[in-house]
Length: 474
Image (tube, rainbow, N blue to C red; front, side):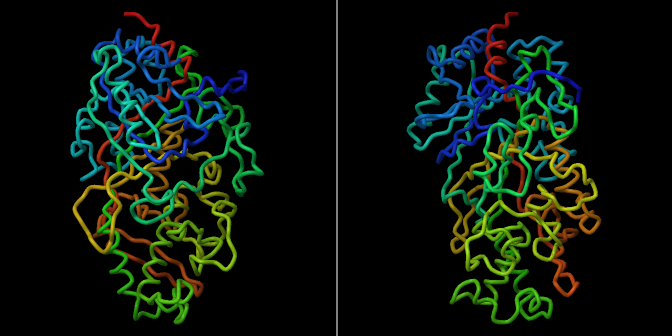
């Protein structure tokens, strides 16, 4: 980090889109590109900054009058910047974790065992060849195909090689494969969002938490800008992740945990006899216990209702806000739940000054067919995730290591992993559900439900930065 008194003005025309404001399209396609001819690739990038020639135009943060048929964005890896001819002095000015790349930082974020880089799918098993992640967002497959052809046909197809493509789709109104409603609580930014339009107990976030060169939550401190200024300012970093979800294992675990609590005194305290009616007129005690366990592990009911506002039922008598709340004790929402680990909001934690400093913009789409618990199959499915921030080490890696996989925010969960995304092993995993009486249900024996299949650390360069790269000559 460096201290600076630079101008704080923000020009949305200079910033790639989908960082501060989401697109909300039904589909995405991520193309993994390798630079094979730097001069031709730079010429193509020049066209992409304004939509001239064959290249699709890069979408910026400018607000729309009419929603376009598609949006297009580029993320550059360190090896990609090197392949495009960025000078060594500029490459050296980037943060160490970005220069190393996600595969070499795997242990730091608990990408180990089956999730280790040596087990990743092609082309992420050869990370030095992953140079650019080109992302296309659209409502229809035909539009994704059209933009991909623009990428493939640009400059005769000689500037880049397409190493892989990964499609995601919003198959059920922001629900993901474990059945939870997702993308409900994103950071809202000072000078970008109107707080009255987004009720939330959390403070608005300085844009310097996502864009390099602006004030952050830390007084008089900004994240260092890669040099020259034209290359680094207004950029953001992204952890692109392909996360395989074992839906069958998750549903089996809910069955097993509900079975163990069905005739147990602790189970009766968790779900008093007769309260299953709060889940619907025909809901069995077993089915209700499954949903309580799923909600406690996440921090929300699967329909998106926060436990903090409705601890006993996913169907409160009056509608509740999905975002306008803060955490109290952990009887309603456990400290160890996924949501509370990743974003403790205003609750008291050990690293109290860090409560609001590790916010991430999350842009994710499920991949694979919709999972039907009544008809289990072997199809791979999961999440294509983008985790955007100004500092990969200070935000993404710190959250993944300290909070999600070590539980350092509260001594009552230290030593346990996140129950949904953590690097769990059935022999050692545990998750605590505190009860009103002071007693605790301790669930054990769950495996790793989410496995990493690939990823890359990318730099979401500003439009001026991409023009700077395009004008390089070597």
